[in-house]
Each structure stands twice: as structure tokens, then as C-alpha cells.
Length: 143
Image (cartoon, rainbow, N blue to C red):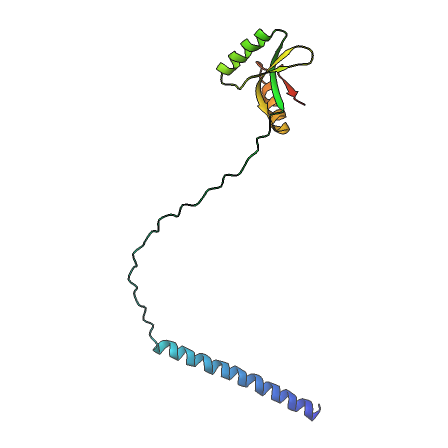
């Protein structure tokens, strides 16, 4: 082995040992300080809680444009307007929002539910048709 390599190895090992001892020496000093130092916590007196009066903010209501209903569940269709009006009154008494729609063929269609959303309209149609009472209900799409 070469003397310069040997001296480098000795130098590095002495350096590592000295760093190790100095680290241990600092650690013992801090432990001694921790033992001798007392920490005294001050008790803080509770401050009274003061609630501020709420500041009135101007509320801005967003403008919501109501989309007109385009999908209608039709429960019946009549040639006579009087029959359609009678059915509409009966549905309104039962809590429905019934409407009469004029058809191009002269008939009067009576709806009992209306929707602006296509997906909701078809879901409701499927649900309603599953009942025996309204199995012949159909969907009118207003153009």
C-alpha cells in the first residue's frame, strides 16, 4: 500500500472519530442544561369574549332564468274541450299542475306533470308506466 493512501485513511478515520466524540460531547452538554433549566409557564388570565355585531351585507340574488317546460306527461286526449277542462280540474284537485295542449289534429291533450329536463322527463315516464293506473301515459315534447 502506498504511504499517501495510508495517511489519507488515517486522516479520515481520525476525522470521523473526532466528529463522533464532538457530537457526543455537545449532546451531554445539552442534557445537562436541560436538567438545570426550569421552565416556568405563566398562567394567562382568560380574556373576556366580545362578540361583534354582525355587519349587514347587501345580498345579491343571482338571476335564474327559468327554462320553460318542454316535456309533458299526457294522461288523456279529448276531441271536446269541455272534457279536457273537466279532466284538468280533476287533476288539479288531486294536487297536479295540469295543463291543456292543443294538438294539430284538433284534439286537446291533458298533461299532469311537466319538465324542462329531458332525462328527468323520461325517468318519470318510465316510473309512471310501471303502475297499472297510468300504463298508457305518454310523453309530449313541445317544439
